Amino acid sequence: MSSNNRRIARECALKILFALRLDEQADASRLLADFWENFRFADDALGEPLDTADRPLSTAARTFAEVLVKGVVESRAVIDKLIREVAKNWSLERMAPVDLSILRICTYELLYQPDIPKSVAINEAIEIAKRYGTKESPSFINGLLDRVAQNVREDKE
Image 1 (spheres, rainbow, N blue to C red):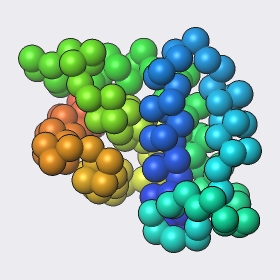
Image 2: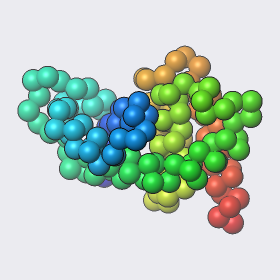
Image 3: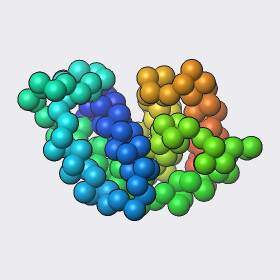
Image 4: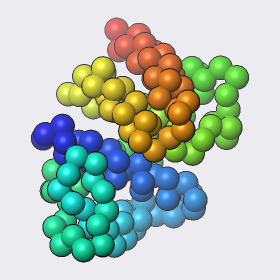
């Protein structure tokens, strides 16, 4: 899968997980179905929604976005535990919802997507944070994910 498809998939996953946090009782599968039914995307690097675009998201990007969303939902307890361990003086409730969603996606990738190099997963999270987060988001996310990656590496050795 091209890196462009993965970036688009990560951005879609961010949007879906952000919506899911508004109603944590919502069914992720239903939310995914609603998302795909109601949004169309241009075939560009950022996956900008276009009201007039008839082309759906590529199958590869859609599949990867679903893997990320379902993986984060199913493994949230493990993911959140890892984030809490490295987020000194920060509770998850204090974190910006966008930042927390990005952290969860990347932590899932670090734990369960061994085909994606850790540096690539972290860099993608930083780039998405630049687009969707605050000006402090990229450095905040980078610092936490570096520590998560170290913990994941130590656990697997």
